Image (tube, rainbow, N blue to C red; front, side, top):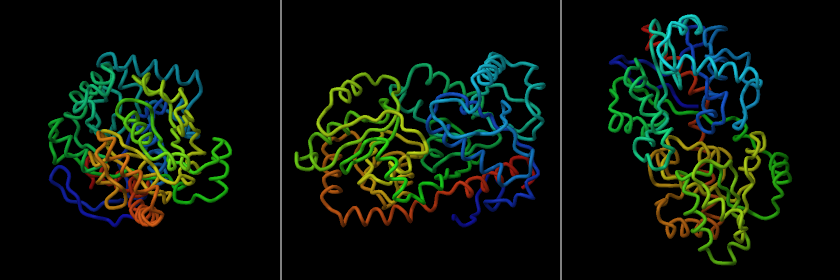
Length: 395
């Protein structure tokens, strides 16, 4: 568990973490991503909200739109029924079309509104938000034009107005200051956590995942949405450049749904390149076992605000090969093989070092487990409650 440390927001000093019985602010969180197909942001909100609820008194942390509970985490489907999803999204779009008095009647009374998608939050509440990354601003070519436009509007209407902002890494905080122009005094770095299941993977979970996915050989794992930012095409090039005897021993397993602008990579995956298999979306309960059974994780994304698959692999004690860019060196420290994600040669050489040296893998696995212990959801939630108390003027 992370120790309590002093931090600064709005010029005030405070200790991270707040006892549940002392959280007096009323918080409303915009939970729209829980209703739609989403990967990293949905993962973050799901565990963050669950742990905020655990640490706060009943009724202190509410959601917009109202949800009876979170259910099971499912990146492909909504957290509520089809009809419930349709009506809630219709309300969201009605409120997001323009500033409306309806906001006053549809949102719970709160001291703080934490925005994720709503562009016209209630004026009576303090405004906060989480900045996950600045990739739409730094690399717009890696995103759909609609996403780029939406991120720029959100930055202008929410992030630059907010009374306080959570950044999920120091790298993201720096980008928020340099690229988005946010006031550094209003930004608090609070790392996300890793689900406890990844720290407690047993042989039964590994066997179940491997049976479900029909995995019979040792494998290098990639987990993520197939889209340009994840750089899967270069990883495929690097894997195919490995010596034949290594590819005969270790498969490259690609787990993740299809995203945008992925036709070229999908064509390669469907053409049955030797040693490469695409599993598609793997249900969340099976992911810890899939990670735990991997010989290594290869995740050479071009940019990450945090990099959940990397942190999850580290918690599972799996050696990691990842990119020496954005937040990834910050998250991994000395517990990963770092490479230039735009160099298939560096990636190939990194894979070769990992797959031909059991001692290197063992050393990285041990360091990864120790490093991953820094990222716990209860710590994230506790620090977040203290952040909200400070923004509300109670800290």
